[in-house]
Image (cartoon, rainbow, N blue to C red; front, side, top):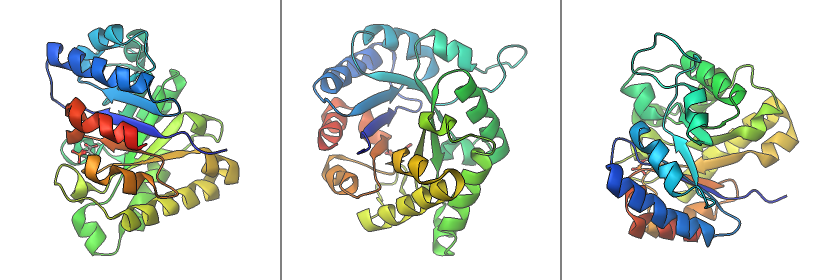
Length: 251
Ligand code: PEP
């Protein structure tokens, strides 16, 4: 069965209450007009509730950019999976490079978050990707494999139906440098191969692998046209309807 394209917008620490709702409504109209494509926005935590309420009657999915793995308690500043479910989130983005690099998250912590998110009934968008020096040292596959193995430890084949993988070469995030379609396809095929080794051919065929790293209207169609690229995780270009909607269109 062909994989359904999945386009997600990671707003990071951007927008405000009014502009976030306005943007989400514009994306929701496009999502409604785009049969056959799953579309998600991941606003900052404080806006999730209002944005979900504003698009509740549309097919637009709303997700978080992170989560904490404990259900409740003395975790100052953190947000649980149950809280995200309570406000209507469908997914959590986990292991984003900004959390790995800036906030020091490692695969062991990300793995706890993956398990908590799946156990709480939400889908996971799991980000993996190499730094520039790792690519230049020829270590891309080793790095991506280590991240996949560590972050997905103990996740079953059945649970993988709720997991999307986002391959995001760190050197291409927010830099304007995009991996070429061939570079991206090569790593996507590698990731799918690892999924086949770990879970078998059916899971590997079904799992969606998004590309992320300076995706924009001008390069989306070519990237999304690669056989193992099933969608995009979009940062900067997801912050404006005029740049995000054409990417949904391309899918
Ligand atoms: C991201 O942060 O996930 C991302 C891919 O950002 P950008 O599209 O801005 O490179």
